[in-house]
Amino acid sequence: MKLNSMKIYISFIIVICTIIIACSKGSSTNPMNSSVDCSTPKTFSTNAAPVFQAKCALSGCHGSGSSNGPGELTTYQQIFNARNDIRNAVITRLMPQGGSLTNEQLSSIVCWIDNGAPNN
Image (cartoon, rainbow, N blue to C red):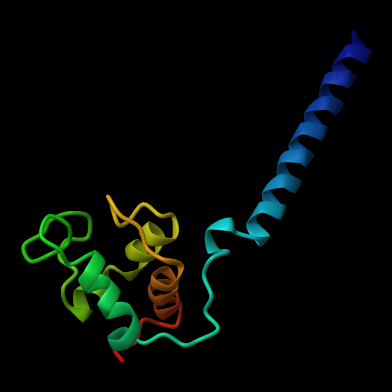
């Protein structure tokens, strides 16, 4: 009986170590970020705002009067206030619903947010 308990204990330790190693390797390279190229600085007015206008600030999505998710995304302040939720939604490709962002559009939003989301 003692030998059986020892085998179970060792198997348990091996499984836990495998999970820890797999998780630590997975966090160093996030496949969700693989398409994001932030080598070129992004601005709100030139890069991010046009994407929000074309893909988000639409009737039935996050246009005027919207209560979906973070609500309206029609002004800089609204977008800035929701920036963390926006980043998570676009990087995981949950948004825009019923559409998609090109890699350039995704980079425009994520890189602008990662750079502090300045009003520039």
